[in-house]
Image (cartoon, rainbow over the protein chains, first blue to last red):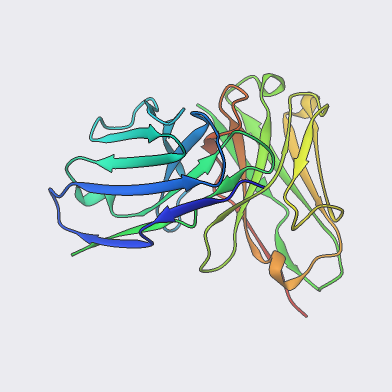
Length: 107
Length: 119
């Protein structure tokens, strides 16, 4: 199985900050990576697919990138509605696997 | 508008069975692979199972393989998860999720149905 190692597990940030979350795959997955935002009591929301493609309706302050088996989600200017938990997920092979999650908290 | 509505959750004793359903609308159901994803209390997201458009390709997480069965009825626009030999560690909120263009990632999710396994 492909392991997805996400870091950090939590980050404290202020509105307007730039936030970066990293996900490392245990083996090559090409660009088969997605990022999700999850708020308590709500369904998860797809933000980024194919490592760097922005899902329709998602603000442009969210971006994704890839370097080998390392993937990054960047929020360029954190907004109040962005405080949530973020997950990466590999879509390269079964079983699909998620990272452990990164909770973005208010500083 | 895409809608996914899960049902069938509840309190069940260890070793018993439960069947979850997901009613889909707002898209061409038989064009899409579908999945179940769960979140245990205080834990992260865990993919449980996925099925392609006609049931020809199915996958399971190791944690549920041999106990859970995914299926679909395209005539009823419905997805199912038959959960057998339930364990306390299966306690979770179970989400139904639509596959984005059969790429193995999830562009629409339901609100979830809660399964609690306890004696």
